[in-house]
Image (cartoon, helix red, strand yellow):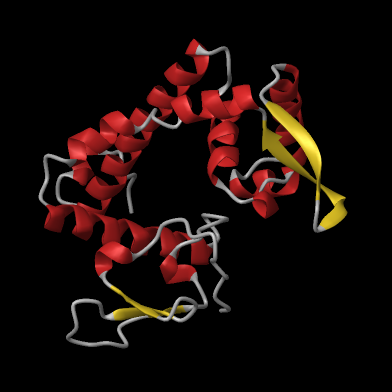
Length: 206
């Protein structure tokens, strides 16, 4: 099997075209994130940390969790966090439920900046509006399935999606508009209801 980037072989290989297209999209994200970060004297990693801390619960805002979420060493995360502390954007504090655990919190300046930075991918979302709801849902379901498969194989470390959750019951309402079910919330789920990052996620076993 040749490289997915070999143009002579790619022409007749749908899988190679999908991989090449995803790589091209990842380039868009890398450039957008890099430009937004550099404009504010931040690294792309620091920018991702600020946005992550803005939108995730306190139990996920630890150095060890950041290392897992972003596939980085704890030393790399600690260096980035220390820089954000120096800039007055992040503070360390004890977790009330276990005072041995140190969590990270955005300062008011950090929260304000993170809110602005979290819009860096909006231009991509604007282009999605040109496609029909059915096309967008089909792409979303395909990507969720792909990410789930990559997570199960170990290529993606963290994926808090419905399809990788122990509470997710797939296709238990056949023929219904919402064929799936969330066992935690006890509600049926349609294709558009599936989550990519759920705070109540519990990893499925096996």
